[in-house]
Length: 223
Image (cartoon, rainbow, N blue to C red):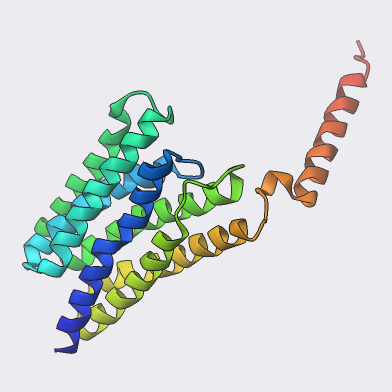
């Protein structure tokens, strides 16, 4: 009973997760701070999780992931419109990833699926965190989307523990940690922290590299 309630709470959160990000991008047209790699990977993992939900006949997993997949296509469209990539061939690795994960889920096991899906999923989330660390502007990244993401992963982790579903449990636990990393950086950027290229330690390190390069150019060649 509790697991069913949590499943539907997770489904509602899953339906809501993409809305703040999509609304922000559509309303402002800004994709500043968004990681292209993250959204290409999300295209694949969203497809894979939809397939996993269909396999388990779990409606709370199917519809949120369909919505996420549609939202991901919308974000990719705006990234393309803003010149972040030229050819739509860039999304092919994401689609191939999704198909490969579906094959693992259906022909090996749910545990193998959970173990495999977490690597690209975690990598994609961490890439978004790194983008927040490096991007001069991050106005295209919705803080509320990541608040919902972290909350949702916590709900699904609890559901997985109650339902003894290892595939979802593994994925939710790792995604929760990675999502917290992204949310932390988005909050720090909101509070006025600049990109790492503007940090005093980074500037000092770059200055030392420049000095060493300058000295190396001044060293006379010996015959």
